[in-house]
Amino acid sequence: MNSQVKPIPDGYHTITPHLTVRDAKGAIEFYKNAFGAQVLNVSPGPGGKVMHALLKIGDSFLMLNDEFPEFGGTSAPATESSDTLHIYIDNVDSAFEKAVKAGAKIKMPVMDMFWGDRYGQVIDPYGHRWSLATHTRDMSPEEIEREQEEAFAKMPKSA
Image (cartoon, rainbow, N blue to C red):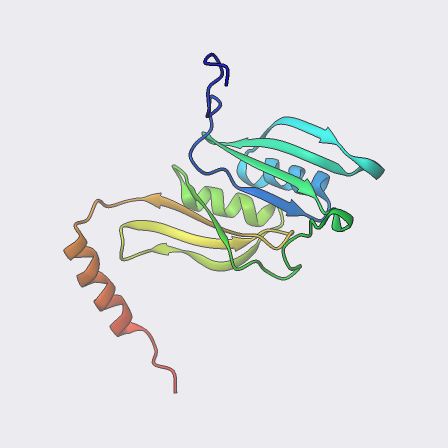
């Protein structure tokens, strides 16, 4: 290995999400409009599809590509993935509203949560779940546990 080459490229964190979507070009536009993504690179693939795209949201990278079922690459279910991508942002209410206006569906409205975040969830038009949050309170594990118990006690009980 060349000692001049960094094993982790500049700007990358330990984990970088890489999504497979139907209509990568549409997804790129959605992520630009909903989350302020910057497009760093788009590599074309066969048939006008996107083989690979690199976006930047805040200080993190997001990779994505079109489905290529012929190579075993399929996307999330059209309804909703069970995975969640989480974004901490300065103003969750504004970011949430922007995502919904861009075409996301509300999964969980923004609310103050027992762990110290103002938090909500949306489903993007490509079936991926995103949680958006602004950290509003630093709390000890004991405070979180106490507030969690209080929150769960207020929840309706199922039959």
